Image (cartoon, rainbow, N blue to C red; front, side, top):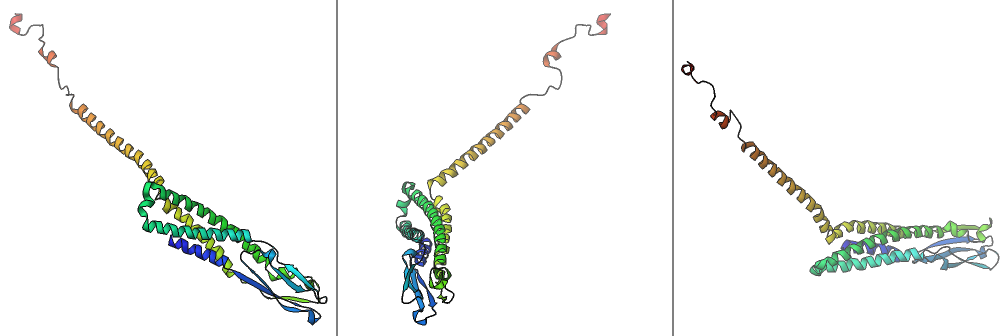
Length: 262
């Protein structure tokens, strides 16, 4: 369970600890109205619609206040919440396995609870990772410098030059999605090992072994009776090699010698 806790740490650390930004520049025809360093910062939980910034309009001193588009806080927070609770449960399970092994196996209650919780966390990791992967895709689109430049009225005029100085770095967020699906694979694979500790697995083995034992015992008994029957029937009945004693004891009624006939 220690490696499950370790992978859970990587998952919520790479997502929950993220902060990034992008930098844009607007070069107006009137250079005094230009702004060549427009910084836009955003971070977890990615409520982008609350991220505001000001840009020049290239029409005098007037400035335009804009905000990014989108809100991926629900998927990001759900992902981090699953990771944190998975980490805490992994630590608790490790302590129980090491120090309370007897109580864990008492009445088969511990393995059953562990099995159910493992199945639930496997499902949550799959849902959370999939939702966060979609949320991260939305974040990438909303923070794309080309998309942000389209929001500026000054950039719609061909005489003004708008460009991106640097784009946000999303490598850690991509890593968080990878760790999310890795956690799902690890927890789903752990289901079988936890299931082997439950009474359901042992009762299933007994259910499968009992019919086989009964079948083999009945086969052996049937073979023994057949052999004994064959031996008794083969040696109990004597073969009749000649006439019976009754037939052999009867005397003929006719004359027995030639002298008597004379």
